[in-house]
Length: 269
Ligand code: IPD
Ligand code: CA
Ligand code: CA
Ligand code: CA
Image (tube, rainbow, N blue to C red; front, top):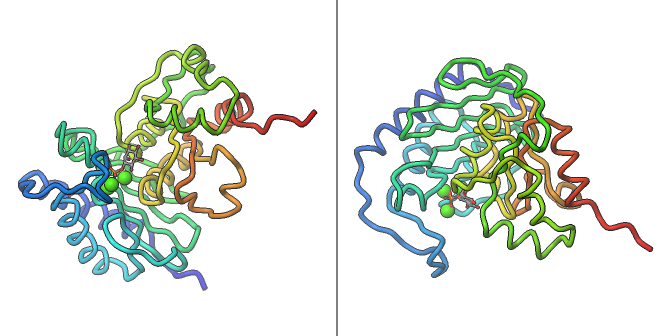
């Protein structure tokens, strides 16, 4: 049974909660930084957990639902579920003090209902409500204009390039010559929102978890963009693409071009 949720008022209340939490975060102190699994590139701070705790409590008051979030142990997503990344871009938060976001989505099983991505430092709040469009600070986001590949900015890290080159022999390095430029900011949810806002056209990642893209995906899809697995078998196994390499694109044509050129299986014979 699909839960009946009145998404318009709930989205506004959720946006208020996320913005308030982000503003509180600006006044809190980082007291502890740990390495997850002893990986010196996988950081978590006391504030990732503090933001998550505040959202866990506040979101349940707005709408009772399961809570699926990065800094906890989760059961698989099934019914009505809040999907939360308390700080997306923790490394940026700790080392650079910018380019991080709070990401909150509500899904009914695999069906997206709403997504909010809050760029705390810029006080930019992106919101998408399924079937009702997307906005940035309350102003509607338009469908990004179609662009040839030669006019596109691609966001991709060197780590992603290295990981993807292990899985495809289609000369992925050439992509850097086909697009206008490449960039790497280090915050998946914000990169996908930049695609929705027309400041980037393509985003590639070799491994994302549901909390990294669940909210931004609603925003991007509401303006005609797409989040797609690079290797289609991944989506058959798990509609949330947990851990899958994926592509964010400003429109379906652009996505099809990249998938065909660089990620389609090599024909036999
Ligand atoms: C990370 C960021 C980063 C992406 C990583 C994510 P976190 O999230 O979104 O851009 O490349 O795959 O894990 O750990 O900072 O929440
Ligand atoms: Ca993390
Ligand atoms: Ca993340
Ligand atoms: Ca995080």
